[in-house]
Image (cartoon, rainbow, N blue to C red; front, side, top):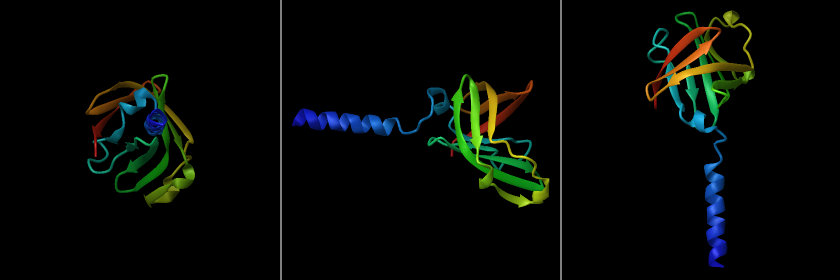
Length: 131
């Protein structure tokens, strides 16, 4: 009976540990990211440990909008699957274009302070803050 309880406890622990569904690489970049050229106070990406995310686009003084989704890392790329129906905005909504449902950006580098992504030959550097 004691062995059964220990086995049950181990299975339960394993189940809890595997609930995030994030890859090993993804767990290394969990955090809140800012683009200091746009805003020091409004994050552009929130990559959460439960595999949900929020991506924010900004045109300072004109429009700010956020879209929720899910994320992971696969083949050295950040993959974000957005839910366009979850959009929240402040400003002139007529300026919002098409919102992609899937975004993939190559991860160039990451550390405790930043994340560098590449898209179409252009490199983007984001500051990381663990909040």
